Length: 315
Image 1 (cartoon, rainbow, N blue to C red):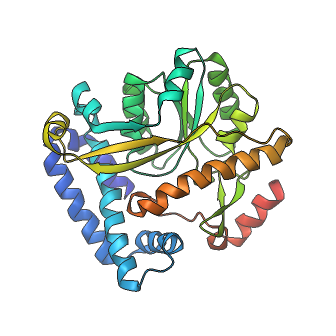
Image 2: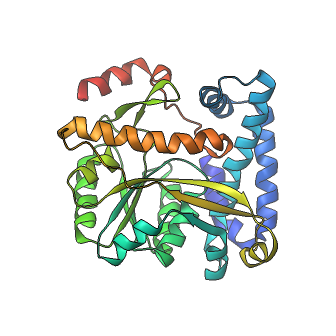
Image 3: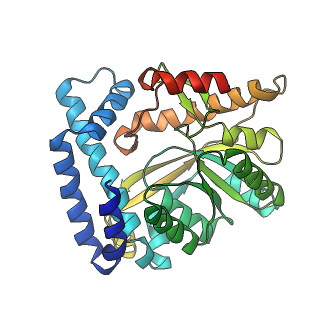
C-alpha cells in the first residue's frame, strides 16, 4: 500500500464507519488488481507456486481474492483502535491452543512462527488480552511516520515491540531472548520472509525459499517451545457477527510444539526446526492461498542475484 496514502489513512480512517473503510479498500483492491502492477504480478508469481495446476484465468481469480484479503487487513488495522474489547474477542477464534495455555499457566514462554497470513495484528491484540503478555518485532518502514503509526497502534494494544532495521538483528535477538527467558511471554514473529543476511533456506511448495531464522534460533536454547501459528479469515454469522460488528473474523491455528532432533546442534538444528514450521504453515497456505499476503520476493529463484550471493556469503 502506498506509504503517503497509508499515513493519511491512519489519520482519518478511525473517524469513519468501519463498513465504509472496508468498502473503500475493497474497491482499492479491485482497482489495483485490474491495474496488474508490480505487486499483483509478484503475488501471482508466488501463488503460481502454491497452485501450479491453475489456469491463467484461475490464477487471476485467485490473485483477485488475494488482493481483497490483503486490503481487508489494512481496513481492519486502520480501524482497530476503535474496537471494543467485546468486538476483539468476537473476531478471533483459536484452534489447538490448549498446550500453549498450559505452558503460560506454568510460567513458561512460547515462541511462534507466523506467516503474512490473515490479520496478525488483530490476533496480537486478542493475545494480549486473553493469552499472555505479547512481544514481537516490527520492521522499520519508510517513511518513518508510517512506522510510528504501526508502532503506536501495536504498543497501544499492549504489545511489547522491538523495532528491527538494518544492522539491528543481533541486538533485537538478544532482547527477544531476554523476554523468552523471563517466562510467561508469547513471542509471535512474522518469519516467512527474510529481512536479514542470515536467512535459512527451506523447501516451500517444492521450491527453495529463504525465511527468517529467529523463531527456531530462539527455541533451540531450550527456554521455550516453538510452534507455527497460521491465521486465516473466516466469515462471521449470527450472534458472533453482531458482537464482532464485522462480517469477518480470523482463525489462529496453533501447531503442536515443534521438536528439533536432539542429535543436531547449532545451525543444523535451527535449519531442521525452521523447515518444520515452514511445513506447518505451508499446509494452511495451500488450503487458503488467498490469505497469504506475499507481494514480495520470497523464493530464491526470484531474488536479486547480488543480494543472494551476499546472503550466501554471510551464511
